[in-house]
Image (tube, rainbow, N blue to C red):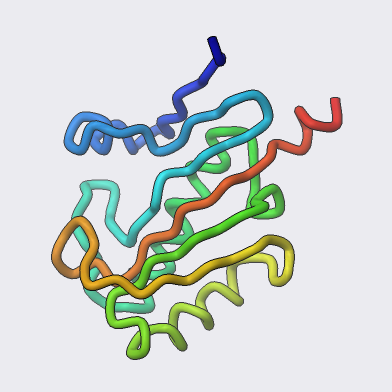
Length: 135
């Protein structure tokens, strides 16, 4: 049996209660992060695209931190985009401000919709906890 640690950062308990999934699961040094979206702590969708994208990254950062990781530990990332051609330039600008460039593989996928109306992007990733991997 594989040992798994369920990662639920403080303030994200509502996600487990409301949606029934864990924000991340840690298996050994691997951290599998569920897709993070631009919502408030109360799970309200943020409507301004730039603010929503910033919240996506902040929520991902929170999940990674709770698992003992940072953005530098991310090795693979997939982002999902509603109206990709409309919002990708803003998403990329925000990404370039907050996420290390050229440190992981990234696949961006256009989709027709996400879990809740108004969501424009979702970011999921795989990280490897370096401190544990180096130990």
